[in-house]
Length: 549
Image (cartoon, rainbow, N blue to C red; front, top):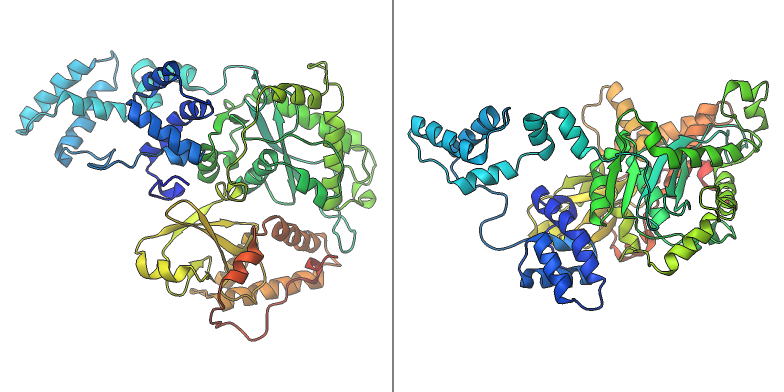
């Protein structure tokens, strides 16, 4: 990997924005077999770089084709920091707000004169024109246009969607959305009804193929969006083989842009940074304009419509359902529904699309024959770039996160030699391991220090902490936490034959732990020397329902 000098999550926002602006231009240059003078001059003109800087960026991107390789870490005075005294910055900010961000629109020269007068009144030297122009360049452009030209002008200029989306080539724009599937699924132990699963679905606008999807019992979240993106981007041969599904599913590759609605999970910092790291643009629909997501809405209608033929369907409305008892007829587990849906995707890909005039799969193969799709340089790291994180300092006891200690032999050196915090990423679906983002951007899988602890989910942790708080516990340690989780799982296990809520909770834990299992966890755990264990002698036994054949 090209040395970036800092972890992805800790990169300065201004340096990161500059790297994001450079990435499409540098990516295009890096794809060329040789750099022609014309291409070099065009890139220099667009990016404002010297030839040596341009060649350096191309070399770094070819070595590691991710956005963070383009981050500047030059010597000398740090970019983004101001040399002026705080009183100068305060005067400049105040006069910009009072004078410049008003109508009629003053020009830069008028602002310079106004600031000279303000500084003279306070008896301090006036700032240079360049310093003032630098402060103006740092103002949010939407705020700038709204203040000087009006809110409508700002909306017209910066609104990401102007109308119905069209794309010229595969993966130029991919739409993504969540929906509840119109079917009741059953648990795997007792085959009794649980709930409707959540489907996260994608569609490629140019070819109408389904790049990927994700089905779970979880509510929509940034993690489920990240898992759907991973499924879409990576090749699917191994995924299909694990589920014993035999279909032609060659769709894979990093999209140029994702188009989504304004749901909270699509605005998460983790999703934003993960997409920027891999050169994926984020486009959002204007508020209260569902027609701007017409492609994904129609696809959801098509795919969910097929669900209405399955036993246990809830149909789309009460009138269509009639007196049909969905819970009594339900018979498919989440795993079985996922296999059925994968086969349904294969049928959809092989059916003539009304607008295309050919099948989506044919359109994909024809379009990608002349245009190669981008794939991640490191497939194992890809999902980690989309996970949430917390900043933690490495201690001699290891990493403490959510009242749990994590340890790996490699942490010993970091605990002694590193005195600052590092990003520790985690998968809310499985807290059996965390992912330490090191200084060079690589990740270390760090398992629980006490290997006898069972894997738990973030929602189990939160429920246990809430219960302990209600019991009056102010301080919570690892032993207390896992004792409470054990008690809660025991209660769920006793109730699982009686109540739907308990069956749903138990099955939700099973599916979440399986979906969130850390990559190469066995290899990392084997490589980590045994740590001293302060926990109970008897291990905490997970739910029996987890022991699936």
